[in-house]
Length: 137
Image 1 (spheres, rainbow, N blue to C red):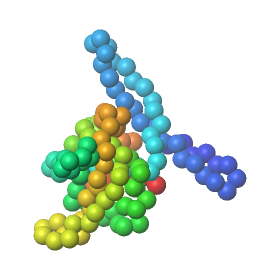
Image 2: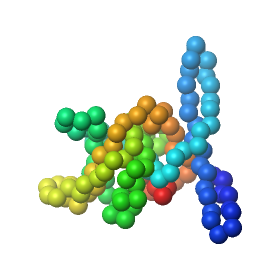
Image 3: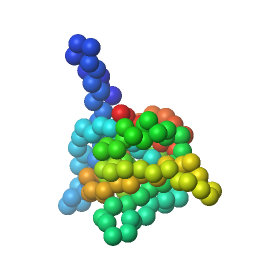
């Protein structure tokens, strides 16, 4: 992680590695990840399409908080099956809702527009907090 300070403003540049294997060779490129963003562990597969749209929802997330959820709208979501794996799904967050009842009452459900740019991204090394890796606002 690189922090750059300009007067009273601090900017944080975080880099991610993307791996691909064109023509049976392995290449690695470093890309700057956008802000705000969140990386989530999705071992259960809580991702589903939203009817009559191109959007998806991913949900039943906890320990996000409404202030953080508000800040993530317009930001980026990366879903990982394991901490050491690249993202298998993701996109631009277009909204969220809070589950009103049932087993998952009070948990957050993010609605996002999927893009290929959100697949194959590693989260930065370090400790995963609860079920999410990074919450960068």
